[in-house]
Length: 194
Image 1 (tube, rainbow, N blue to C red):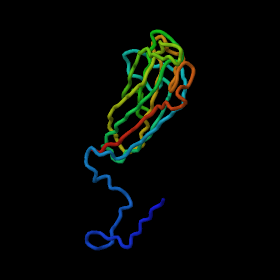
Image 2 (image 1 turned 45 degrees about the horizontal axis):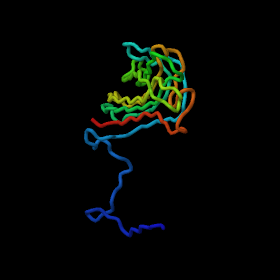
Image 3 (image 1 turned 90 degrees about the vertical axis):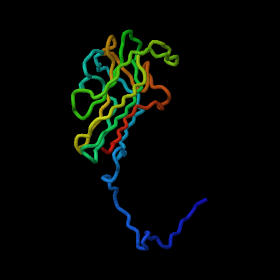
Image 4 (image 1 turned 90 degrees about the horizontal axis):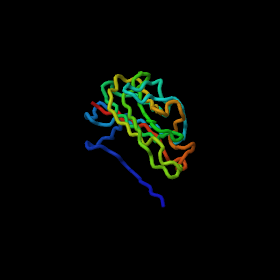
């Protein structure tokens, strides 16, 4: 069944023809409004061997394996960017005393602006091993937009501790992809008006 809408005349409150702006005036949005959203995701199961040391130093952009990037071009220089990221990751084979680290980076700045380390032993019956290190990472941080140039958020992750330099896997484990590609890693960025 289809529907049709016929309009004979369209007029504004004063009886004249209405005007429709050809673009949104974001300046009129009140503080706290979400101006735009950028999103990137991947269900690819990948591996890498570049470690992120499990120590008391800020993760560096040269450490870990490149997992995903997301770009945003702020509309206002004084906006805030709320960055939310999720990663499913673990070691590719069972190693004791291994830590898994995920870190986010802004543009080419060396230091991570948010990171998380996990040393969980996952109970993973489908993988046949109950001592796999890793888990689900959820990183959230609000940062300054600092200008209206395009910004790139980069997600990097890797093993540390005894697992340093051994194979690390995301969106899968034990040498395989799991869940038929329904496991996603993602980055979501919201520009928030100040």
